[in-house]
Image (cartoon, rainbow, N blue to C red; front, side, top):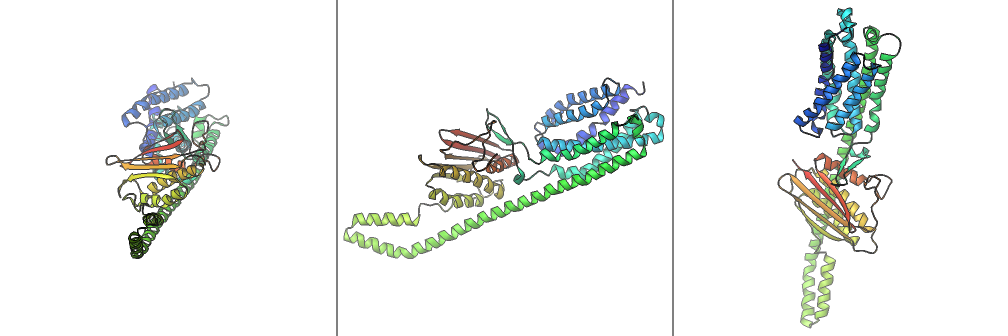
Length: 458
């Protein structure tokens, strides 16, 4: 036997533990379960990984390359179970790690061969695990600083969304699953992984001897560090797009505040004119009252009240962002003949950023007004209720009438009425809900479209 069982076990542990640590720090804020439950799930997967390694090392697999296919598939399954993220992001991270783990294997075997060619030919002698651990730690630390630290805090902005919402027919919760470009970005490291597989297994020379050649190691280094440049460009591209989206959100918020200030100025100017005309109004009412023209007086007061819009609210709540959105859309509701019921009680500091509140409320309100505007025979109505529940929960319920049934796909996910595919407004709403680890439920009943949202503000 070229190596002992404990050496096989040592190699199995060394080949997986450093990667578990890297993936923990990369996805630790996206775990589905608690740390203790995640560890319980990890144990059987680790045992299966060790069994696959033993089967490959002792020749129970007809082709040892099967282990290089089965193990990444096993890691993908594990990450999909314990990590709540888009499968494309998971594959991207995993394949990048696999490519550089191949570099660690190549470097460890080459260095082992320099000290003892006889031990190196034993395939998994303990000296190989020793050098492998050293190179893995160095490479993974380098990867964390070069790629994964930025990758952990990077996600594609909502402007690139093609969100596939997970639809639960029982709870009716919609949760964003991911971002569309990750469906394709993982092909980049997958291509480099196939290149390594071809280099490693093509030809008649045993893989162990091939790893001991300097020229092979240099080729692997060149391929991996060439790929690192491409990965860096991908991460930088996404970060640039995130910054553009953030700037766009800030501009959107500023435009809403400008509308709010303009609205306030218009009302102040209107009030100034009304005060100027108040003297004439009182003179007219006094004249009609003295003449006993009670019917004409009643009509005059009603017309004056209607033209002054005294019933139109100036402030809805203390939150500037919410007040700006509602002040902007309230005249649109009136012009569309929508009977509104607005009760919001959101403080100035709610724990949700102004841009997120603006995007959330404006998307929902605009969709509701559009649905109401298509009504021809029934009364148009829209209700918006929002308030804090405790110190860290924001509840929002928006319900509007509709006449044209909303379109859904086969999975029950609501589609856009303006374009093929999912609605951009609901995509943005779902992204904000996910950001605050909240919940969003949608219900259609008795010609009422109701959206209920809960956000955790801290």
